[in-house]
Length: 130
Image (cartoon, rainbow, N blue to C red; front, side, top):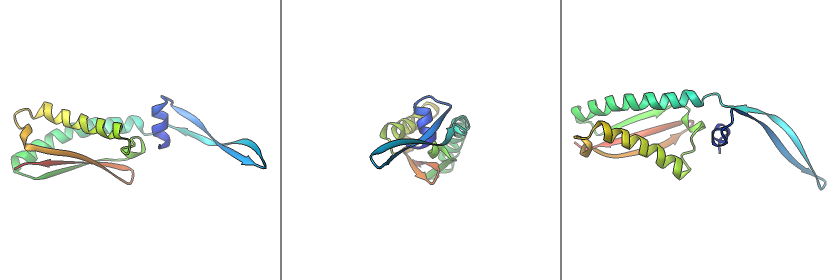
């Protein structure tokens, strides 16, 4: 689990990081530093902004007969572990529900929504039917 994801999971703004050291049958604890939530509110705002932009671009793509739309959410993979099925499915469901709400009459034009991690970014891919 990423450090910022851990902070979000435990609802903490910051935390001290310790290392557990075992040496000669004795255990000691060493303070390694401190971590804090730096980007979480920015990434959440980026996600909300991305949904608004997504609606506009999907509508434009449907009108122009495009097959695929890709969106990038910068640094979101630092906060959201999409290897966790619950997190990945929740993100996909949020995007799908937003699209369904906005494109009620055109929902058959949206074939699938996918998400992949590329470095620290999350890429959303929407496949459209012509």
